[in-house]
Length: 157
Image 1 (cartoon, one colour):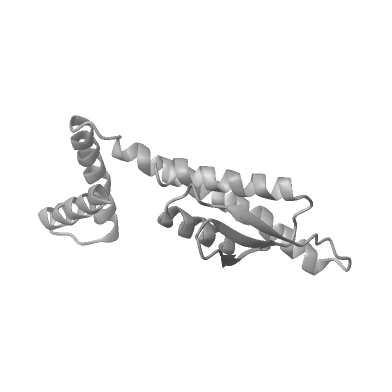
Image 2 (tube, one colour):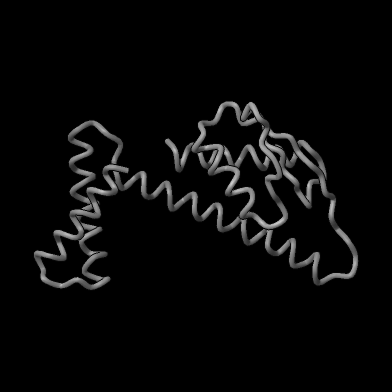
């Protein structure tokens, strides 16, 4: 987060040095700032800043694809006369996740059409998820595991 804020400061300095505060100039400053922050991070032994941004973009692509699939599934349910739902409440273990990872996972699940986090256990060990299309518990848990793994590897690592 510190490197991102440093990148923003560098972009603002870039705009000030060019005396143009336009969106395109700010984006150019972000690109130049990202290169500077990456080189600085590499010299300090940190993970390259640009690689982290690319991982975040990869997660956003994965999540967008998941949103398209689930939106289509819910739209098909609305447009067809028969019911294809296989609703189920799933108890999912989140004790190996940090508080921020739990909150992000719960938000991502709730943003996905057809799923909703309905409760969190008082001990923060379990979340309870209502899924409209869960043919089997194993497949639903596998899908949530994939989402949690993508979050851990691409957003929080």
